[in-house]
Amino acid sequence: MSGTIVVGSQWGDEGKGKVVDVFSAKADLVVRYQGGANAGHTLQVDGKQTILHLVPSGVLHESTKCVIAAGVVLDVATIAQEIRALKTNGLLQNPTQLLISDSCTLILPYHKRLDAAREKALGNEKIGTTGKGIGPAYEERASRKAVLFGDLFQPDSLREKIEASIKEKNFLLENYYKEEPINVDSVMEELKPLTDELAPYRCKDTSLIVHKALKVKKKVLFEGAQGSLLDLLHGTYPFVTSSSTIAGSALVGTGIGPGGIEKVVAITKAYTTRVGSGPFPTELDDELGAKLRDVGKEYGATTGRERRCGWLDLVALKYAIRVNGITNIALMKLDVLSGFEKIKVCHAYELDGETITEYPVTPGDLARCKPLYKELVGWSEDITGAVDMKDLPIQATDYIQFVGNELATPIDVVSVGPGRKQTLWLKPLFA
Ligand code: IMP
Image (cartoon, rainbow, N blue to C red; front, side):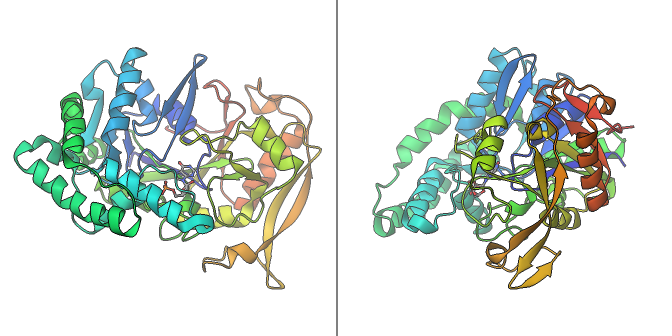
């Protein structure tokens, strides 16, 4: 067994990109299996910032192969742009480093238009999507009318497929949302150069590549996008994304069985953030929340939106541990908590006068939950230069220990800053 799945255990933006980047130095293969350009990883390497939306973070290591598997919804314009930027920075020099599955669902301009039109129509009830067309693209896949990445390379039938798909979207755009229709010719024109550009990365069957790698015990890292609480089935519905974000999705999205998976690592921020609408019991609407946002630079990598910030929520995390089968934790951004005199951690909720410790899955219940807190003593020292657990103030190690004990799950990695070196390893990820 040599597969490790990395998932976000909160509402996304936990720092998966950095962990996957650091872990993938030791991985043979890194696989993206769900979501699309709604994800955004900001990576800080050698003082240079790289933002990736679709290409797996493993691309920063020349010897690590990167796979974009069937479960991903692919915006070809965005990925082509990302590839160009990587190449300009001296990365991805060998096209065989990146393999894109022919089975990926394409996101086309009309999916984005529909996403925006729907959000506009929802007004105050909007989901707060990233506007990247994710929902409409997954819907189309489920309706069995999606255009796939492999279809781009079938010029004889491509136009017909796109026409069939646009017809429905245009009907909705024009008649229901009262928006301008989409022109087929302009979509075809946009796709032509992108098809040529992406042809070197095309792979008919990425599931086979991953299967073979696992069989010979190569180290395979599955890189999740978004967070567990945004899962379509098990998240805070309807304020969720349109894919399944929990660990099981790595198997479905890639097309492999569970046998090859050794670990499920939860990337967990030392506090909580959320972008978009939806309930968030530990949200801080005060200067403490603003301080977390400022110090933690909590602004979306994809949309630039301010992230809502609050204390760590153990009830939600225990739920994430259960639905993902999490075996290990990477605790991120601990340095952001420096300078807080007291640090609160939510250990239970009050729901309709009762104390509960199990996360309520019924839509609406979470919005009525009030957090019950334990208060821990904070620390004032800057910990961004720590290279070992011994360098941390006692209050910080107490915090780590408290969280690990409450979650009954080992914390293997603690991150104290955005750089690769600002990572404290309590245990190695790969033996
Ligand atoms: P969508 O995925 O663009 O449809 O957006 C649905 C919800 O998921 C919105 O609340 C988004 O803000 C949220 N979301 C989508 N991707 C991410 C992510 O990578 N990080 C955090 N939130 C996300």
